Image (cartoon, rainbow, N blue to C red):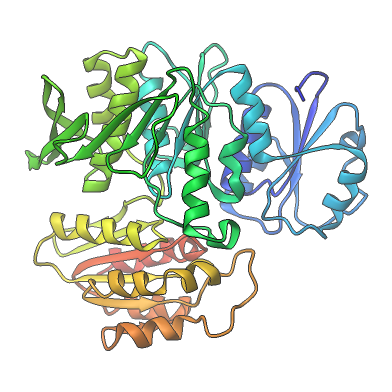
Length: 454
């Protein structure tokens, strides 16, 4: 399928971070765009201000008249939408209907798609890659899984650019619908076992994505990932990993900056300034350096981009930063991500008490990785667990936040969002983290106000 003859795009689930990026892209390209979402949000508010029509009730067969023209309209939906949703049932009978990942696949057929895949780090890495390229002579378009603090958007449109940066999402096997020109793989820790079934099947999905890079196409991957070399040109990277082809060392602070040295075999870049602190962000930066260097960017272009990168909303995002009290909001929702977050905070703020407020995301993920969550959350000095955010799922018997609290022990407690806000007024120092991928972000502005008054 091609986009020839398409004049309008109708998005079912337009308020999602990935769907809204596509909606903004096609709106910027001059197409008529409208859509449905279940609930209003700050993101849907912004889309409406940009001229995109959105409604929040299931219209069934009564979608806007212009978008009932089946010849000129393409409908895009997210797998998070129930199959029984009235509008989806109606359009599937008449219209051309594609998943979001299938539309991204079409875009990668008409540009040089740079995919960023991985259980962790793909949003920050793809956003960093897009920013560095956007500041270089190459430029790029980008479809991101978060709101870039530099662009203040989740999409970047450069009509004349050859490259498109695309977050290659493993959920629902979506990344297998892409046709990448080159890619980064940041991590392969099993996740989404409700979709993949087994850890082996999950890793096979990543191997299949890697195998899409044939005839010497570039694949940049974190050192020690269990990938079998096939037809791709593989370049490994790692922090303090001397066996990796590109190795980052000497992570340190100097004059208020976070720096590292980068070794490419016999070549060395000293004192590279990183816009974001943390070990995991240094790894993400290494991947971006390798990709950009291979694409032909100069050392000065890469250094400049990394230095000025401001990050992604909800990825190690500072909300309050005073001498007494630090408040950081982070999207971490897998044990490995929580481990990196806590390790980075301990590195940055040694000796300070660290309090984590965690909202588990999905009953299935909480069940599958319960031991990992208990282990990593127990490394905090105090843990507050909120009720599980179900997203697309029904409750699973025996899987509760109470059980996490019980297994973590005395340092843990269960609180509702309202109780978290009440608790926050009693915190006067240390480091506070809000952690999770559900709707915990809705209490962040109020938490920030409370803690700014401390």
